[in-house]
Every structure is written in structure tokens, then in C-alpha cells.
Length: 417
Image (cartoon, rainbow, N blue to C red; front, side):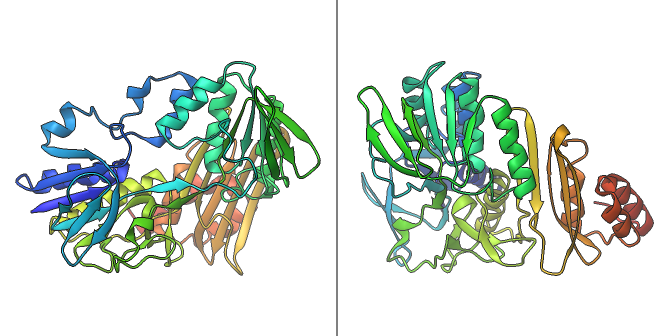
């Protein structure tokens, strides 16, 4: 059996390891389009700060681990897939054949249509090569402009501040992390960042980037103009699916998969940021570009590729963000549902916020900022669809009682997670 995995991120690596465990005799090939060993993008901020060396970003020890498992690692780009002949076209070398294929190609940064984005002083922060460029062009006291205060942007923000740069953040939304936090929590996070010396422009956009000799000039929609040694773009990502054009494999926002993480071709699977899989909360199919979903997908897809039927029951959308010491979480349908109830605790002077969202007697979403104690129980309440019974009105009065609610209800109905 020839298993081929396109993509050497967390989903791809875990899939390769799972396949080897289930099928010791199979041929397993892992294809990555970067000249690096498989690494975690989530570790890049720690590299920027200087807490780890480049090797600290690696998912596994590249020489011994993969070779020890007899997993072949190719550094090349897949340019096309032909399901009829079960072959992959590569940017270099001969085609590669497969019996079962996993698409785990992840995402790529989206560049906004701004004049000057091609300037040498503009960079993404998505790859190790990007990180090398940021390190080479910044030092303590450097003026840096960050475009985008979403989840990825806020992670980069943390690393840049710890590098000692003078940072300005420009976000088109009316708050920070608008796809994870509501207006109260997002603006609480903004005020926190400003208290740490970060300039944050919300409801504002970059109009143009122009050369300024030893740096660039960044023009904003509010009329301001910022000088910078470096501009970093963190304006979102999109799944890497362009190479599937003409393959017949069905795509939408990402690669469409069923409950077995199987694509429209029965011999081809997809996992991670590129897969448009089942959302636990909505019952619809969506792309969840988060590492927990990627690792879960990789394991389940590999089991099915090895002939071990394992159903994917949907992923709970969840995010955890540490921004200069203020930790934020969101789970499930944190924005609520039509006709649903909600409960909120908001103490801005203490930088604390908690919001619970209900659909009937079930908790379906939650978000919080500045609170860390037992927060994982919120995810448990959502994932188990635990009926709250008489505890729902109590939570509407006091959302911080969620721990007591979980303990009491699991005991009352004899439920065990």
C-alpha cells in the first residue's frame, strides 16, 4: 500500500505516524513545499522572541524520527492531482503514485489589495523564512506596523512587543480579534494592549505603503501617517486548494469531506486547515484553521486510510489567545444563536469578561477574557450537550457558577465525560 500525504504540518505528520502504527509494511511519503523539516507555525512567535532556536519549532527530530519510522520526506511542490491514474505532478522530479492520498496542505496568507504591499520592507509572518526576515529587520526600538489584529495578528503582536519594538497595530474591524471576541471583550483587549505601550487603531485601514529611504511610510484611512522599518501583514489566510484545479475533487471554501474525512474521490482524504469538515456546533461544513482540529483530522483520516473505520463527529471551534499576559478563550457558538439566551459578567477595571450563550437548556457557546480557572469545563459543557435543567436560570444570574453546574448536573443524571 502506497500512502502519500501532501503537507508536512501537524495534520500531515500525525497522519504519517498513525499510518505507520496501523500499517507497518506500507510505503509512506510525506511531501512538504518548504525547505524546512516539518515545523509548527504556532512555535514561530517563540522563535521571534528568542525563547527557542529554529530547531525548537520542529514538530519532530527530522533526521532520526521520520527515518526511524521509514517515512520518506520530500521537499517539493505538488502542482496537480490526477485521481484517475492516482498520480501527483511535482514542480521537480517524476510524478508520484499513490493508493491512498491525504491532502493536508494547510493555508496561505491573504495579501490585501494595498499599494506598496510588494515593498521589500513588507512581510507576512507565516513561515520560518518570514520569521528570519522579521528578525533581520527589527531590533529593540524599531518602528513596526502590524496590519491586522485578528487571532494570528494578536499572536504576532505578543512576540513583537517582547522583541522590544515600537508597535502600531491597524485593524479594519471595530475591535481586536473580531472573529473570536465580541465588542466588550475585543475592546477590553485593545485597552489592555494600549496600557502596555502598543498603539492600536481600530475601524481603520492602511491605504498605501510608500518608500521612505531607510524604511516605509504607512498611510492610514484616518489621515495619520506612520513611519516604519518593517510592515507585517496578518490579514487572514485561505486554504491551499489551487493545485486541485481540474482534478475533479470537489472544493468550496476548502476541500469538501464527509464524516470519514473522505473527499469526493474515495481514495483521497483531506485534513486540517484545508479541509471543509463537519462543525460540531452548527452541523454544517466549515474550515476550522486551528491546530486542535488539524491534529484530530490527521489522526482520523489516517485511520480511515488504513481501513479502520473511524467517524469524525465534528470539531468544536475553540481558540485560546495569550496577549501580553491577558488570556482570552472562545468556544463553540460564542456569538450565540437566534432566539437564544445569554449571561454576561463584565468588570472592565479588572480586565475580566465572561459570556455564556444558551440554546434552550444547553450551553452552546462561551467566551471569556482575563479568566483562566476551570475554563476547560465550558468546552466540556458544550461538547457533551449536557442538559442544564434548573441550573440554567442560575447561570443566567451568575455565569461564574458553571463549574458547580457541571458537577451537579453530571452527578444528577449519572453522566460521565
